[in-house]
Image (tube, rainbow, N blue to C red; front, side, top):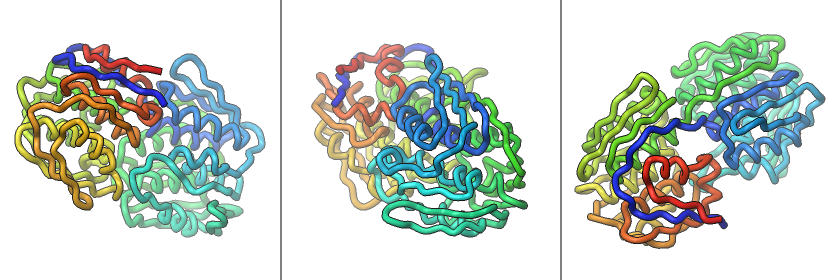
Length: 418
């Protein structure tokens, strides 16, 4: 088990480039590459653990994957595909379930294990299956696998119960090769969905409305391999903004987009930070203690659930009390016990956490239960007396290519211990 040693080091200062969103956007476009024969090239894809798993899965499906340099991935889906995604790979990351729609659309059938990923609560796939059935597929669950068949999908109107990112992406990829027009109502509006839609358009698809609650897809007969520049990771950018808020200082983030983090910026300003857009990213400054504010997670453009653990860590050292409400996943407060080990005053009940700020945390050995929980513990260590050792860093490295390195570039004292 890897670990990070974190020690307080004073205010952060500097200018860093935000890494590409490999976990939340790049792996989804790797799955979409199965829709067309030929070589797809994805750039701005830094190495995270989820990329390794996705590359293994794509290889098992019959594609050839080549990792070029430090941030380029090439997927060759020219050969005959094997439309079966094995449990031992799909169970490791949630994004692996995104191969279901592309395999069904291109091969006419697919057998994909039910998905895994972080242990943060129930994440059902009912909307994926109902949507594919509405598109004309025969869909069922057999022995832990989703089995779907359709000689040719047919466009229809789909209304999602909840704006699920995964369901929107899977159905969008399936509908792009369907006959006729598909309309997805109550679609997810996350920037990663827009990034995937733009990639499908470059492949020859016809996707309109991504980024709004209504997406219209006009099916085409065939797609071609394409190239893509993966968007900057807005979760990494938000993590760094909150690190600045906790440790103080002044930082500039290059490559990210202010509109992807507008609500996060608004909340940070309510807490006493200064945050603004720059021509090539974002700027933030924090002077003095922050004020606690209430937060409730919601689908985009709301406050993203991925930021919630880090926000709780922020509130634990802010002045006053705050109520943090998790509306997306039902098991995401597992990390709170680790913050309590560091002296945080947090009480949870159901989907709510009451956080009372303390003057300072105390360094302690803690364990990351998932990728964002791990990031929250690292940031807590920046403002804790003594040394904090964060175990389970393999979780953190599923989504952050080098969190210790980028924090160190801003002046933090964070060391990876292998």
